[in-house]
Amino acid sequence: GENVEQHPSTLSVQEGDSAVIKCTYSDSASNYFPWYKQELGKGPQLIIDIRSNVGEKKDQRIAVTLNKTAKHFSLHITETQPEDSAVYFCASDTGRRALTFGSGTRLQVQP
Amino acid sequence: SAVISQKPSRDICQRGTSLTIQCQVDSQVTMMFWYRQQPGQSLTLIATANQGSEATYESGFVIDKFPISRPNLTFSTLTVSNMSPEDSSIYLCSDTQGASETQYFGPGTRLLVL
Image 1 (cartoon, chains in turn brown, red):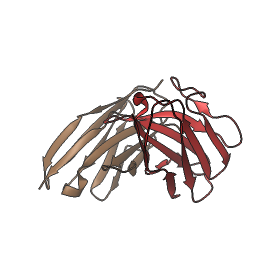
Image 2 (cartoon, chains in turn red, purple):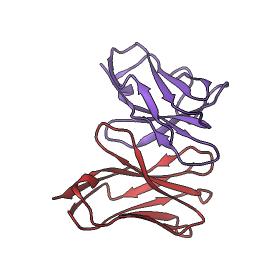
Image 3 (tube, one colour):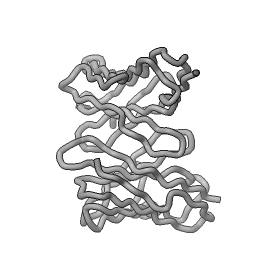
């Protein structure tokens, strides 16, 4: 089955700096790659996603890049703010509509 | 996106008992899923809740332990049966709509088994 690896497990940045989280996947049939943000006591919130026919997608301060050849995708957050502090999960979908998640990255933005 | 609610939001249960978690969506959705998130861990898919038929379970999860119902397009239940402390987790339901792969999650049910 699909395996998704996520790095780093924790990331601490200063407010205003950029943060990058990386994921690799194993199944070449994977074609959909969402990113979720989970705040304490809440369910995961979709923040951005990308499909296999696109190499990059941006939404304000958040961007995701996908390299299908290397089977990796990354989340980029620019101009980080304290409210960006949360746990971030990457995931992949092989078309079954059932997601395989990475292990999560705890991002802390220091004011 | 559809608004997803779950009941209860949290519960503390005794080992050996069962708990049924409800998931309600405010519009008709195509697919519904149940995930488990163990303390400090990532999300693991338990099963796909199929409308009007038996759920499709992932490896490591069985119907006797996690019976699931989906009587219509907007509602599903997950029962955690014969609970042990190892079942202490957050249980999350999610959905997709139409042909979209985009999956939205409910707020979760936080279960502690003593």
